[in-house]
Image 1 (cartoon, rainbow over the protein chains, first blue to last red):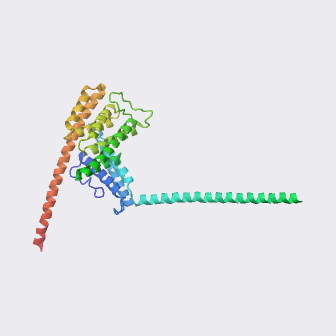
Image 2 (cartoon, chains in turn cyan, blue; image 1 turned 135 degrees about the vertical axis):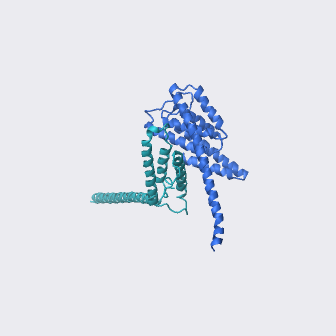
Image 3 (cartoon, rainbow over the protein chains, first blue to last red; image 1 turned 90 degrees about the vertical axis):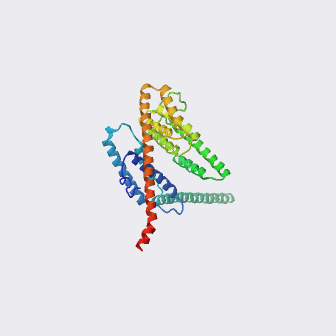
Length: 153
Length: 204
């Protein structure tokens, strides 16, 4: 629908045709976003989604410019098409693709590395506590030794 | 809300397909639960955006509390769009009655003309449905005629209702035309497919 430029290929482009086109596009994208994450459904590439986003955004710009030019002739305000353009772009940008998977993976790695630094820090602290504890025991025993030698002397 | 609407659509599709009675009962339970969830969510969100639940109460948009009023209007528009999209494909249910009542309140209370137009568009779409169409039209007209709307609001609302009714009719006619054209295209491609073996036989 987007790659083949179906919107401009319409025989009679009008407001109804645009509405129907956008409704179909949103429904299709919603289904795609649901199925894209299922196993065996393949992977939607982020490059492809980027090209779809750019094209739909171009359609929107074109539509807004045309609407602005005809603004005085409009007898009734209609926000449906603007809303559907925004909705479609929102769904496209949230579409699970390999880029999203990679980002998720990096997030996980980031979380893990953050966790690991905390663990190291805790280990270090434990080590420090252990060292302190050992030092304290040593000093106490030394103190006890000194005291005991003093007593004997 | 988007996912909730999609789930209701999927469940109602499965309900139509279900042959077993026990399976049907289970699906109906899920459908009722989803519809109640949607009603609760919708009423909560509308209330949060300044549309109170009492139809006779004076409705005011809380400009100080709501933050950006434009964002609030867009949000309400989105809710109405999703509900309209859902209800046009569903058979009459409790959900329709609740939505029609709430939409009437929005149409009356909305300060933004786009939201008001959308509310009337939803009502106009409902008025085109075979099962609840007449009741909806009567309800809106009664509301416009007898309820104590401010004079200016009533005039604007009456015009919007008229425009949206025409728009709903035009969209319905356009869809009929598109369906007829696609049927013709289907017949044509079907006849072309049936001609292919004859053509192959002629060539070879």
